[in-house]
Image (cartoon, rainbow over all chains, first blue to last red; front, top):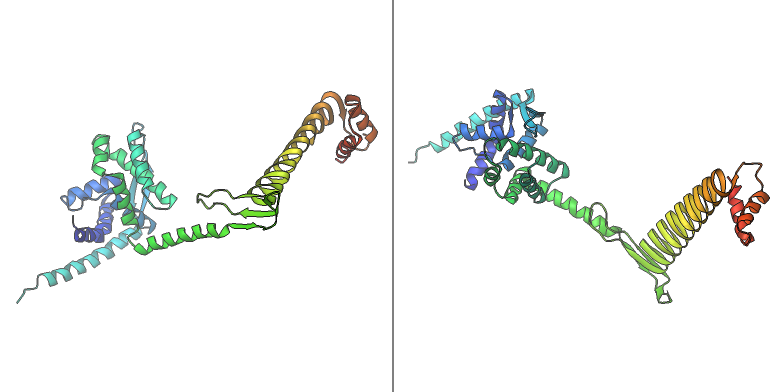
Length: 114
Length: 256
């Protein structure tokens, strides 16, 4: 992925994470898998990219985390993330901004060259 | 935890410049993450997919410090802390020398604030330093004729832990020891062990105090125990003992 692609991805990763968490609570590994599968490989996130974004969202109170020990066999507990009401409101704002952004970009990119 | 995972995580953390709290957060999350990934693949495959630990650390930092100003601010803070340590250092060495040693040598302000730093050594007739050696020495660790420090060793040693001819301290060990716990030929303290021991608990050939164990014992009772009584007991055990020693011991025995 080139630098431009990286920057574009960084710009939308927060909204994608909030969207996925608005559907159901997920743990980090699941988020990486879902982003990868649903985007058909376009949003294949590295751990070093995903977790700091999660920290940022958590510190901004848009998401919260909780640990769950799902079975005795699995020694390490899982850290789940869930969206907060503030996160839902933020998601709605982000969606509107993104829509306006995409429309604006399209209107420029689709402009015919004379 | 599998040693391969542990070593991988350690390498990521070693290459990460971040607050300790952030490092702990990352370590915990990565550990859980790897554990999840290993439900599907082998440890080797997972770690290979994640890539070189240095690169993982770099990715983390790249995202954490998206705002480069934060990195610069952090580096400035680190530099200022380091500068503060440098500025704390003070050294003075007098030009006057006696027996080849400076009359006064002060050398203080070793490393701290988590920065590695050597303790500062002072050597002189009067020495003041993190480690001080001199006729009169003052330091965290002091050695000399008269030494005062957390740990002191000298003819006259005063300190938390004092070792010397005359030792006075929390733990005092010496020919004449005075302290919370005193061990010596003559030991006076909360707990005293010696040839002549005086204290709350006294254990010695001559034991004088509240609880006593010894060959010649005397239970001390304020108001009723007399100087003569104490002196006589010590002289019974040690007939050739000097008068001044008896006087000193008697003084401390009855000054409870």
